[in-house]
Image 1: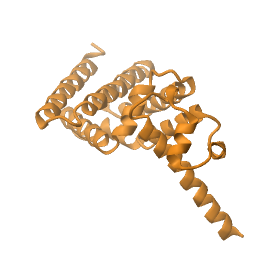
Image 2 (image 1 turned 180 degrees about the horizontal axis):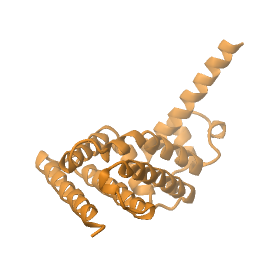
Image 3 (image 1 turned 30 degrees about the vertical axis):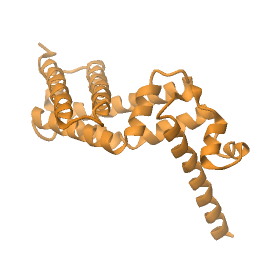
Image 4 (image 1 turned 120 degrees about the vertical axis):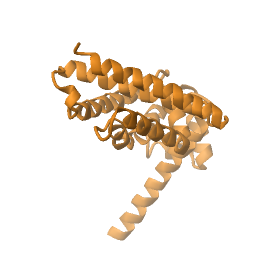
Length: 208
């Protein structure tokens, strides 16, 4: 019996993932607010009623995509602001990690960039919730740095949000160069480096 249940559960998970993959592919060309349930089920090859065994609505599907797109990024975000190395090493590491993630998961990055300010409220809220978690985790990493001595919690959180926002901006810039030349990617890398340096300079002198 348990073996049969295991097979059923695996099949259910496989179908659920098929819905997520199909929706992500369809969302390359449109926003979630315009995505039809029948579009998704047709792409998966199942009846529309099968959708409701996995999701309550397309908004619910969108929230699941947010979890998939951002949920696995928490270790990477913490790594980008790790106290290991000097300021330039941290900046270089952060930009390399962001560029690699965009290369590996462009559809996820495009989905988050579009839906962060999109028309589906539960999805916007899910993205904001994940970004708030990122900021709290970045704040915890920043607090370990000797440079944080004397900083208030509010100021550390403000700085953490600056870093998170900058990571999203950098990811969007790299996304635009996926089909571009190496010169374009290098230009984005240089811009991102200068922007991160500006934040670092302000950080060093904030208590002045």
